[in-house]
Image (cartoon, rainbow, N blue to C red; front, side, top):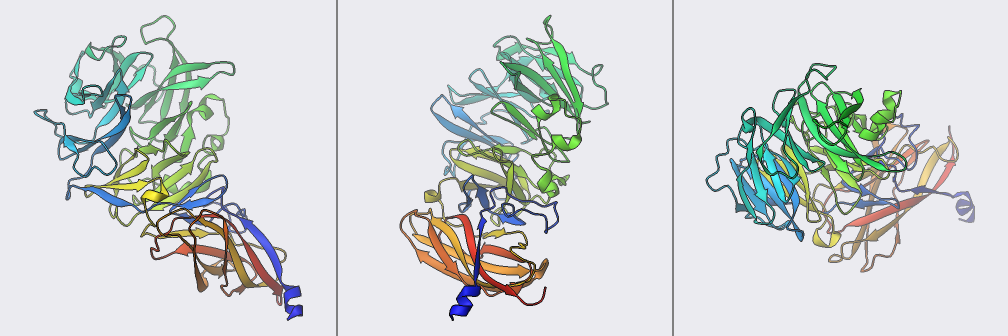
Length: 495
């Protein structure tokens, strides 16, 4: 026995805090990366299981066209939901019977875009007259914009330096209002002669760019051809209005495929996610544009049935959510680390129409009319019925000889206070052979605190290079956080 113990070696592997790597050879992936990372959030210290999703609204096959969360009257967040040619308002993340705000308004399509401005949420869809929701009066009415054409053609809006701007659908024109104006005449600006590539205006936004010693608010528009124009100045008719940058990037995934986070604007393209700052910094290699999403190249094959791939932004934790390639996978970015995981949902069993973040919860709208909630707080949710998976790289530790796994000590802690349970389940695949799964080892440990626990598992396994698969196949009521694991093994035998 003593001889056996003397031959046992130990090695520690950290949690995959650098996220998925889907483009490198399995032999080149780092221990802090993962081959699979499903239904986990990534933090600086480890990974955490997401909470259980639940259906809050089921419209019975009335697809959700749009969701938009905003701060109501400076006190709390509300969310507008558009379906069945109506606009509804949720006041809490569990509000299963939202209020219908539509009244006598005429609505014929549900694919709205939203813009906050001067105590209103303005709504545009390129078909119906723009709407204005008063965050003070909690009421919805037709917006009073007029212009050189029909305001019903306005499809996406934003504010820039105290003025409201909106894009005219399927044109190279935008409209803008007066200083602080929430109604009245708008002026048209046609950018067709400025564009270097034929295309229509797709989206616009403002952007605060760090100049080194100060920030400057800039005006940004993107086109269907992937052209980005960046202006500085007060407004288009002012003497200081000038074009300061131009770039062409791959096709942008729709009018909603951008998000302002801090002083950055992230743009979701067919190739990947680009921080706008990378464009204006004078990078010479395209690969620099996409550094934040290169390792998850598979996300970029966006299904053409989602013309506007919305991005959701978690206001409590450093996460952004993107609709993935097969319409049923959501890619989750820790934008502070540049690390990715994925979410999958059996509850949302059809394609995703929209994503939103509202009152400490992530929301999914699917094509059958369900509004699905994933709360942030482990105490308000339980384990996902979809299961979890963390698959490590194929690890060639110590030597290339055959390794015989003895035990695994998983460092974990329980975060869900109602079940008081820590759970570990693992199987092993060997030598880059996905079909070589070795028997699962499962262990539960009852715990009422969030102390880190070493949970020991003993799956058998022999191979030159081993990949560890930590999974939860069936719900057990736990929300766990994993901080890494130790492996004890023997090596020897054939190379």
